[in-house]
Length: 272
Ligand code: 5RP
Image (spheres, rainbow, N blue to C red):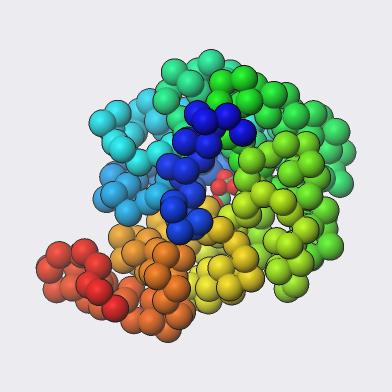
């Protein structure tokens, strides 16, 4: 990896080898997802706590303050929508030149292994890696899972390894039983996808398990911005990822921050 690409990746995955990415790219195929109806309003208070933000270019342009120092991981694949029977039909939706113009630290593309569009999505990944290498922009492969595919370790290990073999610099995938096998078979960092909204303690347990089994962090959206108190939740997730807090400790932090906010006090983390 050249210096520039390494430098960009080091802004996302911190010196402790970990990252808490805030995923807010849902609209590229889901439209106005609950909690992101006014994306700017949701994202603004969370931005200072995110190690990186994963938006679309439309959200960058309309809803993110250009003075932000939070690294951007730009969603550059799409072309599908929630109306599709089969959501695997994605292509590239942003030119690398525009990604560079937007000063992003990485680009993100979904791959659909085992789907009717497997080959196209994998060749798009290859093309994006070639362009990423040319411009020094790391590529995050997102192992999307179509409705008919099981999220078991065997399948997710296949997806992550294929992504890494094609050249992805880091990979986002789901937690599963046997997750440590998925991580150990992937030669590049893996971040855990948050997935559908869970009760906060469960989401923190999922995060803790993933970190314990070798994940380099999380790329979490709904479990943060759909929480009762998103600012408290991202700080609780960071406690697990960066301070090795246990789920219950992080959940206590969440509740104490939430109580402070509810009583009108500052929402900043207190040391645990
Ligand atoms: C699609 C995605 C989503 O756009 C988003 O990033 C998911 O985040 P979360 O599941 O944590 O809400 O990755 O594959």
